[in-house]
Length: 239
Image (cartoon, rainbow, N blue to C red; front, top):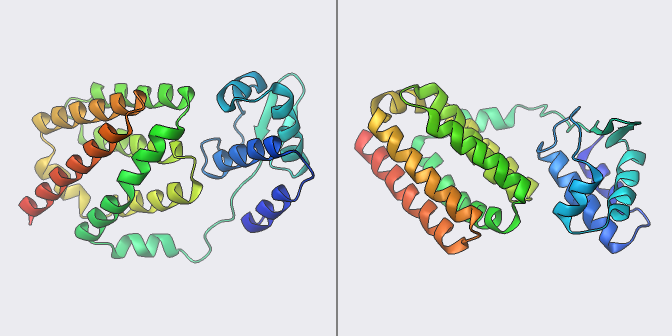
């Protein structure tokens, strides 16, 4: 189903304002693939607790999503995502990523990441934070494996982006990660991601997580700005 049409259909339902807020929140999570296709949604009780509404409100929102074929309910099993975003037919994202230089990439990170972290601090749910904590644990388990560290680092940033509850921002940041995966990053990491530097990054990301978990917007944003300065120094050193 076309994304624009889906938004119009969902917003056109005759439902109460609170139900519409829940519909929008759930659909944003589905579109950002926080709840990927074919996966089961959290229980009505869990969603009600996370969103601060009654189970009846959640149930009514799920009714709308099911009617629009965004989800499918299975008796005794729960609600499952059936929605799939329209594919990128032009390959535009890939082309942009391939043309992005290391400096372009860092500039975009400087624009997006402070606001991304700010929104994540405000909007991440306890469930999001628990999931983010697991990624931090994975990061801290790495000793020398560069590929593992990079994979978990990307996972960390994706979860923070998804935690903003802003699907457009999350999609923009997916493109930033795509650019990050281009050829310039591999040799850069091989040259600079030593065991000592891995430990340094582990400490940094632990600090970032603690600020997000404490709902400390100022500390989290200040941290990411300082982290980006260090990333810039690394890039200039490489140049």
